[in-house]
Image (cartoon, rainbow, N blue to C red; front, side, top):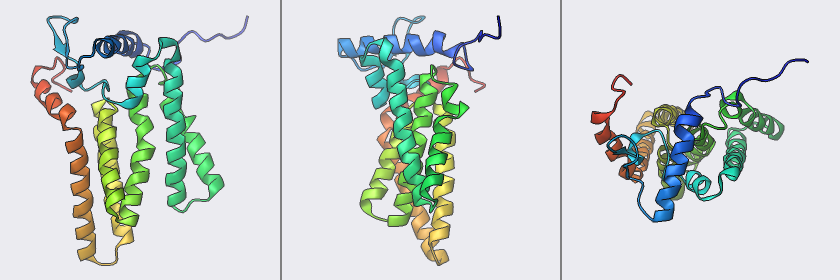
Amino acid sequence: SGRHADGSLSIDILTPSIYNLPYDVRFRQYIKEGYLPLWNSDQALGIPFSAQGEGSPYFPLQILRSVLPLIYANYVTFLGFFLAAIFLFLFLKDMGISEIASYIGSFSFILSGALGAMIPVTNVVSSLSVVPFLFWVAARAVNLKTPFWRSLLSVAVGVQILAGHTQMAFVILLSALIFSLYYVRLTTNTFSSFIRESVIIIVYFMLGVGLASFLVFPLIESLSITHRPGN
C-alpha cells in the first residue's frame, strides 16, 4: 500500500535508453579497437558519430565512463558533480560571497533538479558539470589579467564544447561571454580599458573555440545532412 514511484530517475525517460546507452556502447567499441570515433557504420547506411553534436566522445569524463564497466557509469557522473561543486564554491568565493553562503550555493546547484533529475542523460550532465569551472576561470581571467588564466579560459571554453550537447554549450558559452564582459566593465575604470580588456577576453574565447575546432568544423559540415533541420 502507499505511493510508489512509477518512473525513472530522469525526467527524460527516452533519451537514456535510445541514445545515451547505445552511444556509450558504441564509443566503447571505438576505444577497444583503437579507432577515432568519426563514423558510425552500424546505424542506417552510416552517420557521423563525433560530429552529430549530442555526444561528447572527446570529453575526459565520457572517455572514462566508456572505458569502465557500465555499472560504474553513475560514479563517473557523480565525480563530475563533485568537481562542479568544488569549482562553483571557488567561483562564489571569488565573487566575494561568504564561505558558508558559497557552500550553500555549491550544494544547492549539485542537488538541484537540473543535475539530479538528469543523471542517466550523460551528455546533459556532462555539459552542466563544466559550467562552474568555466565561470570560475572566466572570473579569474578578468580579475588577474595574466597569460596563464587567459589561456586557461581558452581551455575551459574548449572543454565546454567537448562536453557535448551543442545546444546547451552554445547557451552556456554565450552566458559566460556576457558575464565576462560585464565583469570587465565592473573591474575597469575607463572606457578605453574596458574596450581593450573586452577585446582580449573575446579573443581568448575564440581561441577556445579554435581548440575544439576538430569537433566544431565537422559538426558545422554535418548540419547539411541533419534529419532535424528545423532545430
